[in-house]
Image (cartoon, rainbow, N blue to C red; front, side, top):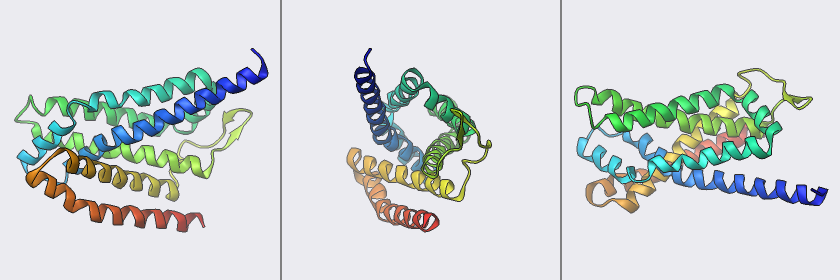
Length: 217
């Protein structure tokens, strides 16, 4: 393969991975957002409606995350190795959050006695997944210590105030996506409830963005 062809192939796969990330953020963003908002209401009928709105979609949305991981591993192994070295703990928390969230989603319908546990797990799992994704993005924006093609920083270098802010910002950003999804997919009281939360979620996201810029500058 010529140098030009190799360059074109790398550019193609970079585009595929970037597209998969964008699609994942949009599709799983509303999914996670509904899970985050799930913990802000104790009304069982509202919770059931929220669950039903994402039930046909939530299981397939994580597929895009698998495409991102597989694409990095297959086409950019050095980037994959550096990323895992730098974000081993966030990736582990991400997987645990996704697993616990999925288990909670299925089991809340099968256990009346422990429904409180599964409800809490669904909400907490959604928050953890959103936070570590945002924190990882913030840490990458700050830069990663690399020497000789390997990660040379510490295990908790990603846990910087800027990364914490971007993590919190993504939690509220996903909640905003979730509220928008509920406005589009529901009606009546649930639609009004979700619509009432959009304004203050937008305000919080803007405040966090401003605070993050203040730290950078």
